Image (cartoon, rainbow, N blue to C red; front, top):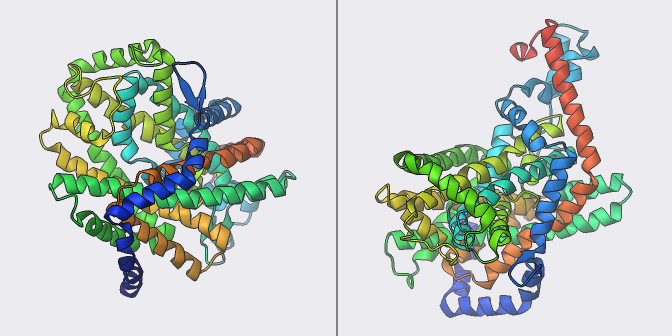
Length: 541
């Protein structure tokens, strides 16, 4: 471990001058000159009138979510209770060994032979349902939930919250679809390491449909985009915002090397986690994500509890603004766009990134993880983003720190003001939360990026090391420089992932429906067997 870290910093430290002061401005100019066309293309807004425009990538995201919601018969509603049961491990036995093995014809032989057969036939995978869920949540629950909500409200007013919730509910169906495919078409190495995500279901899934060449092109594009996104939005942006909060909290000189030193410490912590792969990432995120989300939600609940008489007024303002616009530029449609955009961008449903983390789960039934994954947008957008929005609306009834309809740039600062108005000095805890959010997002995105890297450049220790060194270098760079056009390009890379992913998932939807039926049938087999008095083999094993 020590030798590994020293080798990384031996490479990183001589390159740090590249990321300082005037060089930062040069990087920004160069990136804008050569990548501006790509950013403009991905975030191009289709004009529907003189007053409002809709980014085409948003239409693809929400259009896909609507399709999946209808095609899978509102799985985001009907599968919610089932998702809770699966996360709690209620069907772990059939997912690990298969319903037929436990309760079908193969259960005729009793005793040790049966037990050994079950042990030998256990499911592939590296992490539990809960670990896969928290690993994926750690990549989406982050600065968007704190800063992004404040920005959305500043532009679209309280009504944006309603459409944010709508986007989260629709996104649940997208997550179900892509994560089911992630498990269905994953590769499992001889050592048990799982390789999964859109790269694999675009390649193998579309090949099964007679579109192998098309699938390969989409998979390569996705892999390129996910690598770029992992270095930028999933890394440099997170490090940059966490460093900025740290410097501001302790009133350090922005012109000093405080950001760089912060980046070095953050890189060291990230290195310790990502060296261990998805198993270690899952072990960290299953502790960090519930902890940081718990603190944040608890603080929000305290504020809402202290102002419980205003909650109904806040919801009234949200619903009124959602359907009237309340004077916001673009009116109703303008408010709708801001809410849906923030919700969709926050939970990344349809982007395909989460399918990479979820594909590592231990199960024989792909749909089981798809059902678990639908909880992700609910937690991220419907719960946490709504909490943030309610706190801001309630503490800003007099408009003393935010004027709706006037765009802000620093969302974290305004969210901190909202929390500080009820819980003095909560900005200190918020800074810690921002750092933890950034840290968890980085370690999950490092896994996403490496999966794309391995798909393009092959599996092996040398390939893994090359990616990890680059990733850690960009942690330090991100904390040291002003990002500007660099992060615009990186964000464009992330949302460019939407195009190949949505195309592939829509084409493969019939296969997803078959997997869902197969899983429900397995559950019914188990429940029928238990009703008939079959032994619960969990106790035997």
